[in-house]
Image (cartoon, rainbow, N blue to C red):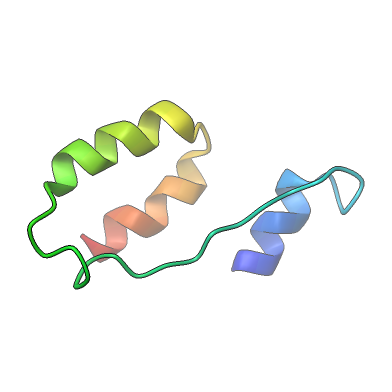
Length: 57
């Protein structure tokens, strides 16, 4: 899934693209995931990218 998303975002490798893959669910047990989701929505416009977060929380 990640390689496909990178190709899409980078216009098939023609534009720079960065990806950060991390598991924060157990690392930050006390984090308010609703606040995190709101912050992510402000910075990530692609609904498909946000879908992965929703499936895990």
